[in-house]
Image (cartoon, rainbow, N blue to C red; front, side, top):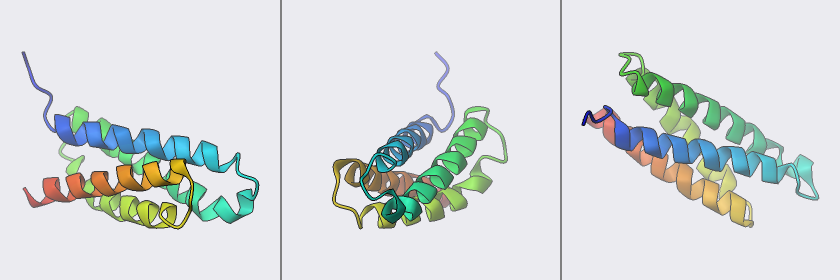
Length: 110
Protein backbone atom coordinates (compact mmCIF):
# COMPACT_ATOMS: atom_id res chain seq x y z
CA UNK A 1 0.00 0.00 0.00
CA UNK A 2 1.34 3.42 -0.97
CA UNK A 3 1.40 6.00 1.79
CA UNK A 4 0.66 9.57 0.73
CA UNK A 5 3.67 11.79 1.41
CA UNK A 6 2.98 14.31 4.16
CA UNK A 7 -0.13 12.36 5.22
CA UNK A 8 -0.01 13.46 8.87
CA UNK A 9 0.50 17.11 7.92
CA UNK A 10 -2.33 17.00 5.37
CA UNK A 11 -4.67 15.58 8.02
CA UNK A 12 -3.79 18.43 10.42
CA UNK A 13 -4.38 20.94 7.63
CA UNK A 14 -7.75 19.34 6.84
CA UNK A 15 -8.80 19.49 10.50
CA UNK A 16 -7.78 23.15 10.63
CA UNK A 17 -9.71 23.92 7.43
CA UNK A 18 -12.86 22.30 8.82
CA UNK A 19 -12.52 24.07 12.18
CA UNK A 20 -12.00 27.46 10.49
CA UNK A 21 -14.98 26.98 8.18
CA UNK A 22 -17.21 25.92 11.07
CA UNK A 23 -16.00 28.79 13.22
CA UNK A 24 -16.64 31.37 10.48
CA UNK A 25 -20.14 30.02 9.88
CA UNK A 26 -20.84 29.96 13.63
CA UNK A 27 -19.51 33.50 14.10
CA UNK A 28 -21.99 34.69 11.48
CA UNK A 29 -24.77 33.39 13.73
CA UNK A 30 -23.57 35.32 16.79
CA UNK A 31 -25.71 38.20 18.07
CA UNK A 32 -22.91 40.74 17.52
CA UNK A 33 -21.50 39.67 14.15
CA UNK A 34 -19.56 42.91 13.76
CA UNK A 35 -17.55 42.05 16.89
CA UNK A 36 -16.61 38.76 15.18
CA UNK A 37 -15.44 40.36 11.90
CA UNK A 38 -11.71 39.86 12.50
CA UNK A 39 -12.30 36.29 13.61
CA UNK A 40 -14.35 35.52 10.49
CA UNK A 41 -11.78 37.14 8.21
CA UNK A 42 -8.92 35.19 9.84
CA UNK A 43 -10.93 31.96 9.59
CA UNK A 44 -11.50 32.45 5.86
CA UNK A 45 -7.87 33.37 5.13
CA UNK A 46 -6.48 30.52 7.22
CA UNK A 47 -8.79 27.93 5.66
CA UNK A 48 -7.95 29.06 2.13
CA UNK A 49 -4.18 29.03 2.53
CA UNK A 50 -4.24 25.74 4.42
CA UNK A 51 -6.48 24.24 1.71
CA UNK A 52 -4.07 25.29 -1.03
CA UNK A 53 -1.10 23.91 0.90
CA UNK A 54 -2.90 20.60 1.53
CA UNK A 55 -3.76 20.20 -2.16
CA UNK A 56 -0.18 20.88 -3.23
CA UNK A 57 1.24 18.56 -0.56
CA UNK A 58 -1.20 15.80 -1.56
CA UNK A 59 0.15 16.04 -5.11
CA UNK A 60 3.70 16.02 -3.67
CA UNK A 61 4.28 19.33 -5.41
CA UNK A 62 7.57 21.03 -4.69
CA UNK A 63 5.54 24.20 -4.07
CA UNK A 64 3.55 22.79 -1.14
CA UNK A 65 6.25 23.35 1.41
CA UNK A 66 6.57 27.01 0.35
CA UNK A 67 3.10 27.76 1.74
CA UNK A 68 3.78 26.24 5.14
CA UNK A 69 5.32 29.44 6.52
CA UNK A 70 2.18 31.32 5.56
CA UNK A 71 0.09 28.56 7.14
CA UNK A 72 2.01 28.96 10.40
CA UNK A 73 1.49 32.73 10.37
CA UNK A 74 -2.22 32.51 9.59
CA UNK A 75 -2.88 29.63 11.97
CA UNK A 76 -1.19 31.50 14.81
CA UNK A 77 -3.14 34.69 14.04
CA UNK A 78 -6.38 32.74 13.86
CA UNK A 79 -5.67 30.91 17.12
CA UNK A 80 -4.89 34.20 18.86
CA UNK A 81 -8.06 35.88 17.63
CA UNK A 82 -10.27 32.87 18.39
CA UNK A 83 -8.71 32.73 21.83
CA UNK A 84 -10.26 36.13 22.59
CA UNK A 85 -13.80 34.77 22.28
CA UNK A 86 -15.64 32.70 24.85
CA UNK A 87 -17.57 30.19 22.78
CA UNK A 88 -17.08 26.54 21.86
CA UNK A 89 -16.48 27.04 18.15
CA UNK A 90 -13.74 29.60 18.71
CA UNK A 91 -12.07 27.46 21.39
CA UNK A 92 -12.12 24.43 19.08
CA UNK A 93 -10.77 26.50 16.19
CA UNK A 94 -7.99 27.96 18.32
CA UNK A 95 -6.91 24.45 19.30
CA UNK A 96 -7.02 23.16 15.71
CA UNK A 97 -5.09 26.17 14.43
CA UNK A 98 -2.44 25.89 17.14
CA UNK A 99 -1.93 22.20 16.42
CA UNK A 100 -1.77 22.86 12.68
CA UNK A 101 0.79 25.65 13.15
CA UNK A 102 2.97 23.31 15.22
CA UNK A 103 2.72 20.53 12.61
CA UNK A 104 3.56 22.95 9.79
CA UNK A 105 6.54 24.30 11.73
CA UNK A 106 7.78 20.76 12.38
CA UNK A 107 7.56 20.02 8.65
CA UNK A 108 9.52 23.17 7.85
CA UNK A 109 12.24 22.20 10.31
CA UNK A 110 12.49 18.62 9.02
